[in-house]
Image (cartoon, rainbow, N blue to C red):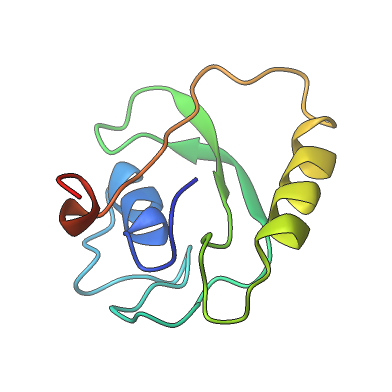
Length: 101
C-alpha cells in the first residue's frame, strides 16, 4: 500500500527475482506520476528471489492518484483482503520526498 508512483509494483517484481528495469510482466510498472495499476492484482504460488519458499503478492492501486479514487481503492482493498485466509506482512511504501515534509 502506498501513494501512486512510489514503487509498489516494482517492489512486487523485485521480490520475485525479476529485474524491474527489464521485466515488469508479472506486475505492470512504469516510472510515472499517473496511475499504472488500476485494479488489485493477486498472484499466488510465486517463488522468492532466492528460489526458497512460496508467497502470494497483492499489488494495489496507489493512493492520492490524479483521479481522486482513494475511498474506492481502500474499499476494494478491504473487500479483497477479507477473503484471504491470513496475511503475514503488510508493506506501506512511501516516496522519499514525502518523509521530511
